[in-house]
Image (cartoon, rainbow, N blue to C red):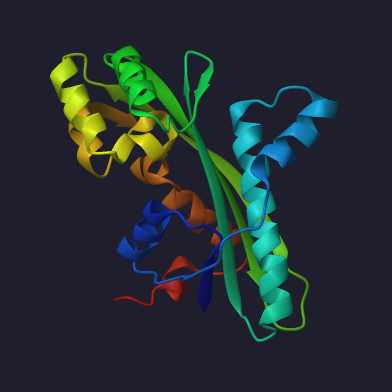
Length: 214
């Protein structure tokens, strides 16, 4: 059974590969800022879980629609996701600059935040309308209190934290500065594998049927 990842995230791709799945990939054609602005204009500010689920569903729906149109023989799953980090009620996205990442890390050390991850999975099959299942997973992340300014500077200088939600990774250089993760650890990487497994089963697909790298 085929799997299409509706994302260009290297972390999500690596996560699926480590789980025994070599997916096809397609970049979703979704203007995330416009989607959020449109919804918030009528419904008010979205909570983090609603925010990530909305974007995950729009991304997966976009790719599922194009896969159905471009590849009528596609038989498998389309997976979309979105993540954001929340600390004391504040949403912390990608810092983009070294100064912002440095300030972020100085404020995060010794504290605990929550990584919200939205998931959307479409079952796509020839001659049938795509069917979707979706869910949000959360994991709390506690940062070491003794991270020094010198360590922060060295970490920021690698460039790793500049383009990731929350300015940290748990599966690469940033992992040494994280003391605890409560919840599915893969949620912090980019997608909860246990959540994806459950959503696949809701759509009638066993997770082991997706293994194509073992």
